[in-house]
Length: 114
Image (tube, rainbow, N blue to C red; front, side, top):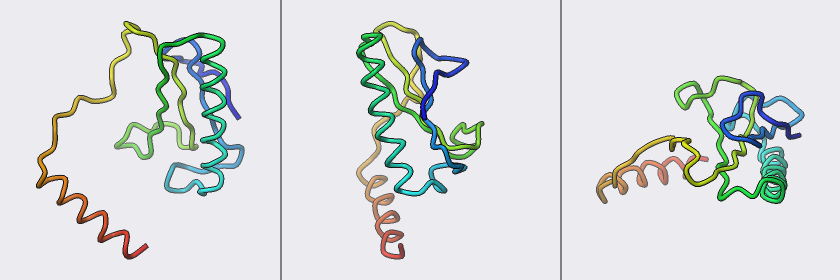
């Protein structure tokens, strides 16, 4: 289901949540996550038609370290307009090839055990 956020980052800021409880991305089933993703797509289309934003942010945080403060899976759908003063979640610099290869090696090693 979807509803407007009571503390919106921008007008139209919506939340999409599954009806059944899942604490976070690691606990939601792949099937239920697919349902949420389809609803995010529908909400984005509704917001585009109704509010004509210049863009949309879709955001989810899993775990306190990522900023999760409501422990029921949800995705934010946030309309964006040029100059709207919302700041990006992070500023990043380019990773070295060595660093990327190191992470990739760890990810692919873990994939073999799944």
